[in-house]
Length: 92
Image (cartoon, rainbow, N blue to C red; front, side, top):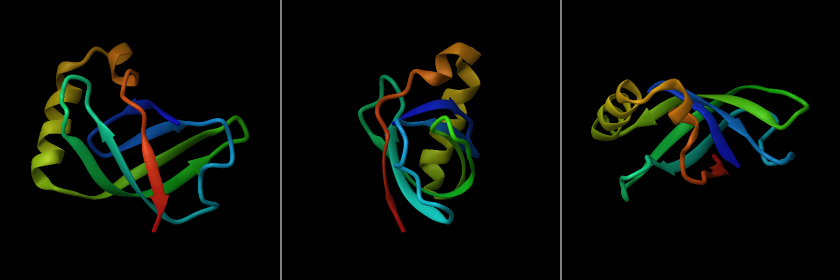
């Protein structure tokens, strides 16, 4: 699974299929390139399609992580935002 697009309020995800819950919330963690500290967040599944794509809205994230993510997003050209490290999640 990888992040196809990222903002400080949510993300578009892409996977091989079958990795998303049918609905509801999930725990995710990911790293911003160049930063070894992982960001942990609770997210709500907002949509998914038949091509393995899905969108999530971030629900709960440490304020320091949200600020770091917002700063990173602000500094990145649109094409760079999709170059995140591998993402892992587990259902809540």
